[in-house]
Amino acid sequence: MFAATAISADAKPQLYAELASQMRGLLDGEHDLIANAANFSALVWQAVPDINWSGFYLFDGAELVLGPFQGKPACVRIALSRGVCGAAARTRQTQVVPDVHEFPGHIACDAASRSEIVVPLVLGGELIGVWDVDSPVPGRFDDADRQGMEALCAIFIDSLGTAAAGLKAKKQQLI
Image (cartoon, rainbow, N blue to C red; front, side, top):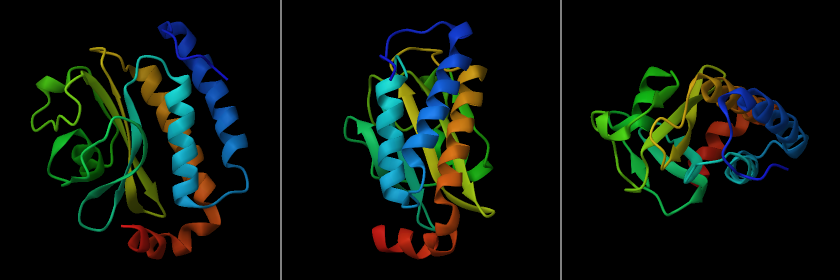
């Protein structure tokens, strides 16, 4: 397991490759959305340096609702028309924001957050939510982080595998 200390840009691919390996092992054989999301956010929280929040917002068909996370208490509901999470969900494109104060409509759940990366989570063509990571360091996230986070999210989506058919019903029960 990694210690979450500062990491050079050159070392990021190795960090994410090792995290991907750990993530596969951690999620192997488990298909529960909440269990996997909880372990996913905990692993990233422990291993990725210079972050102050990591977690999920799940799409309930109308808005994003707070899911498993690590960090300070967070905003509970986010409209798709608001903030970095809403933009990722709406466009289904990863958002890398070097300075959240410059992002129109940014939602400040934690005033200490300065940069953010949000990856949309799509399963079977349907939005299931977003993966959101914040940092108190301006410009913390770069293309290596985007690639790494997207790869980790693909492992998470794959872990849901056979549960895809029951996912919609499960989300409705939880939200």
